[in-house]
Length: 437
Image 1 (spheres, one colour):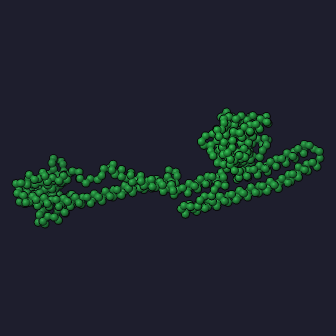
Image 2 (tube, rainbow, N blue to C red):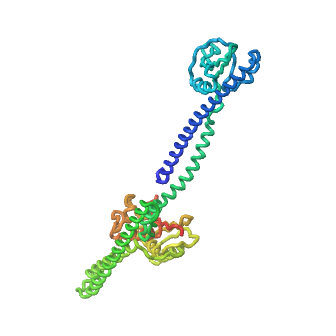
Image 3 (cartoon, one colour):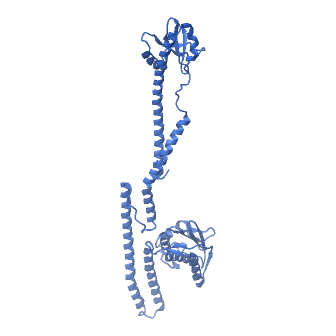
């Protein structure tokens, strides 16, 4: 998992499962130990009772009672007194002998023995030999039977661990989501800041570290907003101050000698300077738009652009229709579309195609031309201010290199975007996207 929430959740899940397995295993071990101790305490008391019961019976009647005295996990039997068996010392014998001796008369002989194996090559059967009287010895056998207090089946253990883990996982997931929500807001705000410096400030709440990060982000955003505003003011002042000398130059052209060619060249230079100043100011303003949004009939807007192109002897074909108006900044969208259409008509030989599409994600407008296209490495660089792809789109066509940069700024300020792609059959397509609402 790559997200912080996923990694914290995974750590909690793994830790929970390990803790459950260890705690369940420890509980089983303690339960088994206590159960064994209680079982052998019960067995000691039971054998002491059987010793008293059989000791009071006539020796001839004892045998008929033995089948009824089978306890399952251990079987008491009788054998004639004086039979000798090898000595034995096993954990079962040691654990059962201690409580038995506490309940029997100390004079009664209690020994651990190994009975003869049932078949050659097999192990013998451990047993306790308790002296009864001169006629019999009471044997308590420990055959290899499954103990009645066996641990729960593996499926029960797995179900228990899974159930507890699931409950903890749900609680952990909610806690992790709650704890990382400020981080998600910070990431979303940082992403929005790349498109719109006027995004709302982050709420400063949550853990102390997150509050500090949010406060630092808000300070940074305020500084960027201040710097952008100052840049816009500087450009506006420069634009204003340059207009006056440019106007004087226009007036003084009339005082020049009657050289029409020289006068035309000077006027061209003045026009280029004026256009550069105006578009530089437009670019600065496009990064910090203040236009309110409204419901705009984009279908009517693109049709008006087609009418304007027709008045200039150009062809802008429109394909597709939009089903409903779109909420956007009207002048900003018109300016962006105008820039894209002008480029397509200029480099497409006076003809271009505009395609409209609308779905739940928003509106997509594609402007295609049959021009020379662009090298793939320049499809993104042409959005840089003042950058011009000289190899494919010459400076001779005019312009300042700010049209695409302004158009993208205007779209990103509304949550949209513009990108360029080369067409398969040649030419370029500009794709403008506006989000729904």
